[in-house]
Length: 186
Image (cartoon, rainbow, N blue to C red; front, side):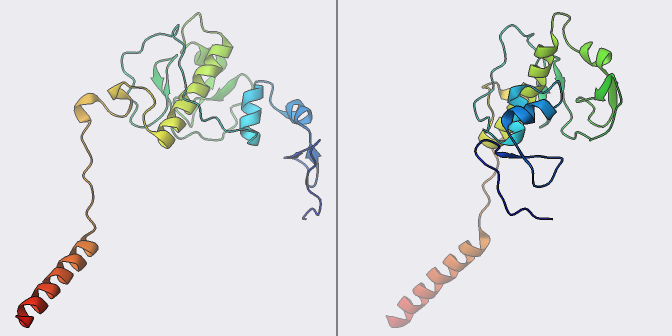
């Protein structure tokens, strides 16, 4: 079924559950999960794209090891998150474990991974920052100035620049041909 009409300025978002129905931002907020913040919803809708450099609060603990082999690092729990996040139903009072990715964890066990003083808002912010940091790194390169974000310092090596052997061979053949013609003419 295809719709002939498009969404309007007052209801600009397609309803994810009903074809050919458009919703306002307030209606989208009303059908969104209770844990979703305005930022979560607007990012999911593509209202705007977060491209600012993530900034970790200075009150959070300083983690000893931030090397996660390319996966997101949760700076509040000081743990690496899984790059693979499965879409599984974990039931009531549980959620997908972001540090395992394809396992469930109870909310109690999940919050126990964070400092005692951390609020649920801190925990959600830490998860959002971990993904924002990872995405920023993928798009723009390392976002913090510590060497251990991309690799442990002892493993950082410059990557060799590949040489286009086809172009080099063609250039060498051209030079050889010109040299042969020059010699033949003299």
